[in-house]
Structures are given as structure tokens and as C-alpha cells.
Image 1: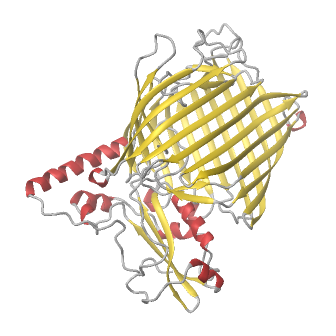
Image 2: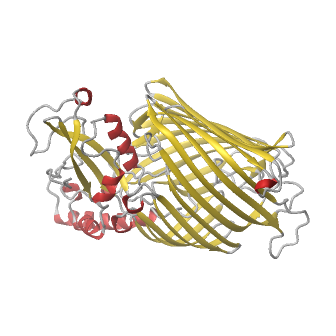
Length: 593
């Protein structure tokens, strides 16, 4: 396979600037340098403890049509459609891999000394790593569905901002396929900061998520959160040596003891994957704090150890559906003691040891949608719109080393509804817990729905409605609500109980501003309303339903994979006790708007 025999193309529409006076040129270069430094600092903002729910790399949109224009060395003839290629029995021929650097120097708007220096300092992702993630090889039958799924796999890597795969030539029954990707900046040395719920998280760290272009991530960090101070090292890779193996190693020495974890697995990486297996281990000693539980010590030491091994098999994709089966064994220990240097007035939670074999089934529909300007700014987003179902069942007994007889269960169901051409609703439900002596214990039921309603090219209305219900929760568990998980105008863990509800309404604005081709800018106006209550949890006085309003600035960092959307929010609580600050200032980094 050839790496890049095709002439390079400009990824962004060319736009030649008018003549600019030398003084303005100098000012512009200085401004770019300052903003680039600011971006690489701000992409570290809130990374310690920030919410990470996916792997997104914001950048200018790729605009590559499904057909033509053909590269300069390809024959000048009409390229058959995907349907025609498949119907004609076409097979994959040559695979051309074009991985672009962070900045497109062929674009006059990005051709300056600073961006050229950044490109030279950056080690591009190795072509072999890209090739091994593709689901097709030379000689395979041409299938647009396989190309689309390969695109989604590539886009899931945080060291790419986007990926496109398309046929570029057809001759003698063989299709030449082009794979285009663009790297982002993956090195982060510096200081990070996050503020949520009136509490700060700070850190000093060094992280590289694409070491020497191999996809290996390494992080060395010191962080301070409201709960603990931590010195940690993490090493991870989703494609060890270009394989399908995924690993993650984590070591931390904390102010309240330590944490060790390890993971090695070969997951169901594609809809057609037939076998999978994995194992994980966690050993965590920490001090926990309960904010609403009555009759239990407010702080206590927890020693949690969990081991899990599993294997799975599938017949692959059949029509639009895939069905997968899993079996495994879990040992889950939670032991509690008095926290160091404390004299609790209430007892600590009761020890809990669960050991059980389990079986599971997963059913998923092959239905995905590419979108833009929903949870990101000017970036390709992949949404699963198909129906998804997952269920597992296990049996814990003293025969396996447990301290109790119980049946453990878990399940989730998700689907989507498209009410109009401009709106879509995504619904997810989940349940997990166990049955002991004929009654449910430590069971949590939850559901949420997300509405995306397109008002115009620049405006979108987003709405979230979620609810959770706990049944006979274990003594070390509670459902909390506050500034860290939805009620942006209130302190950290402001309410607690065995049930919670949250409603969010948010108007999102996606501007065309793109300062120095480094940061996409957006804004939001939001309203949050929610409450956590019930179940013998005490937080006096109970303020009932809480509401807040606010506005925020969104900065989509297009050239970095370490921080996706920076949130700068001002939230104003409308309820709560008089001691709450009248204005909450939040700085966070998330992978969504």
C-alpha cells in the first residue's frame, strides 16, 4: 500500500487575503503567538477531574464530497456511485493514506512561522496505526457501510480532529480508496484549573496522548480536588502496536491513601467483530464523605477492590442488527473503617463482599447519523440513533467467596425519535442493583432524554430531562445534585437523597468567529431546575426544588485533543438558603457544548 501518492489537497476553502501593511502583519503574528499560547494553556483548564465522555477533536469542518473531484493523477471519468460499485462486485484495490499535520501550510491563512514551527515540533500519527484501524483490506468487497464505520473508529481517537474515507478511482473492478485524517496537538505541559459548585480543582501535569505518533498516552500529574490531593501516573493505548488490544494502567498516591488500576481487553471494536475478551483490576483506598445520609458517619475510609474477567462472542452483523453474548466473573469488595484522625459519632457502613459469575446479552441496531453544531462547534459528530439493549445477570454466593447470597442485575435501553427534519430526541434508560432475601437492595433506576431542535444555522435549542430513583441504597451510596452535575448555580453536592430529578433548557449559539484559526466561539443561555430528596437523607433545611439561570461562553479548541469545549459560565441561583453566593462562576472543560 502506498502512503501518499496522490497530490496533496487543501482541506479548507482557499481565501487569499488582501495586501496588509507590514505593521499589521507583525501585529497579527504577535496576536497569533499569544493566542496559541493561551489556547495551549486553556486546553489544560479543568482537565483534572473534568467530565470526559468520549473522544472529540474540534476543528474546521472537512468538506469532501462523496464523488470527485478526482486527484490529478486519476483518470478523468465519472466515478460510479457507492451503490453502483457494490452492485458491480467492485473490490478494494489500493488504499491511500493521507494524514495531515495540525496546520495546513498550503492555506495562506495558516502559512506563518508560528504554525510552521508547531507542525515541525509535532510528530504525526504513524500511517501503520491508521491502517490497522481500518475494517477493510485490499481484495475485500467494496461496502460503503464498512467505510463509514471505519471513519467513526478513526474519529473516536482524540489525536484526530476528523477523518474521511472515500473512493477516488475505479479501474478494472478495483476501487482506490483514500483515507484522510488530520492530527491535533497532543502534548500538554502546564497548569490546569477547574471551578464547579463553588469548589476549585487545580493541577500541575505533563501529558502526551499520542507518544511519537503511536497512539500511546502518558500522563504524570499532581492535582488538588475538594476531596483529596493526588500524585498520579497513567499509561494507556487503544491500539497496542497497531493491534485491537486496549490497555490502561493507573497509579496514584493520594492524601487519603492510594489507587491502583489496570485494564487489558480486546473489545467488540466493530459491528462485525466475532470474539472479545478482557480483564480489569482496581484497588482503591480513600476517604469518602456523605453529604445527606442520616445515621452514618459523615466521613469514613473505604477500601474498594474489584476484579473482573470476561469473554464474549457474536455472529456479527445480520441485516441491521448485531447480537453479542458475554460471560464473566466479578469479585467486588468494599470494606469500611473509621477515617484517620476522626471520631465519628455514627457507625461506618457495613462491609460488603460480592463474588459472582455473570452472563450478558447486547443487541444493537446499525443506525448512525453525522451531525454538526450539536455538542461541538463546527465538527463532525457521530450519533447512534438505533435501538440499543444490554442486560446482565449474576449470582453471588459464599461458594464463590461472597459474604451474602444475592442476584445481581443490570440493563440499559436506548433509542431515538425524529419528530421533524430539524429535531431529534435521544432516550436512554438504565437499571442496576441486586436482590437479597426477596427484596431489592442498592438498586438504581434512571432515565434521561435529550432534545436537539435546530432553530437556524447558528441557533439550536437543547433540552435535558433526567431522573433517578434509588431503592434500599447501601449505606455508602447516595444520589447527589449540585453544581458539579447539573445545577450550575449551586454549591458542590448541595442536595442528597435516594431520588433526584433535573431539567435543563439551553439556547446554544454557534458563531462563525474563528480567531487566528485556533478557537471556535459559541455561547449559551441556560435554565436549570432540579432536586434530590427522600429516603432518610437529611440536609437541613430542605430548600425543595432548586432553580438557576445563567449565560456562558463556549470555546471550541480546534487544534488540541486535550480539551474540547471550554465552558466559562455565570450562573445565578433563584432558590436555596441565604448563605449561597448570588453568582456562581464555573470554569470547566467538557467534551460537549
